Length: 253
Image 1 (cartoon, rainbow, N blue to C red):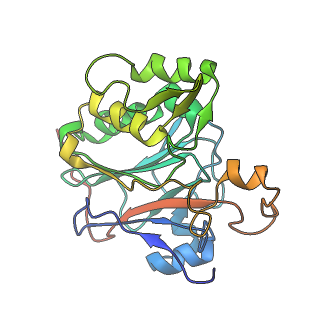
Image 2: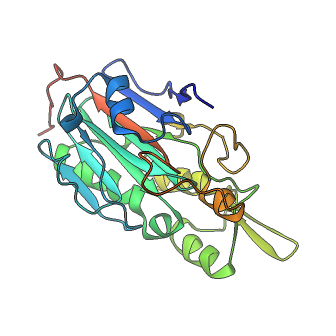
């Protein structure tokens, strides 16, 4: 595969530029910056640790990324992004305040409530109202393929619930085995935080099911095909978002 594969969620307005990548360009900095038409130091990606930590970006810190699994900012002309290879990339924007965010949510981050934490921090720092936020949930391993242990399922259910209408939509038990849909779990988390259902976009694509389009950590390690870690962008794709530089942040009083 040599041609770039990009998914542009249509949930955001014209002030926002956002996309999810496939195997190519993956998370290759030069390629991503070229697509966004920005300099290298205008792209920030954190060092991901499967935490619920959120960084509030106030300047161009690309040269020294900090450890976190979510980034929010009110700055224009600066792109933020996360790397994934089965975990869920989530992009957020609230156009009235100009705040944006990017979240990496694996099962640990989902169980720790990282998406809810990002929504809450955008509200606290920028005055962004959850009801006005728009969210795009990108490709990740689906409930069709993501078999997990019962201990993992218990931790995610403790955060996302499991009873009531739609409560079990993000997991199922088949043949005594648990299967988890992380994208659906994070959608429920966003709804619980006050985001409107019509403001949530899902790609609906499983990274495990589409080896021609996406890297999948579980699939590729199982098949012994994981790309060399030193390869720029190898083994990962990502989600990226920025707002136009000429758009000023309008923080609510």
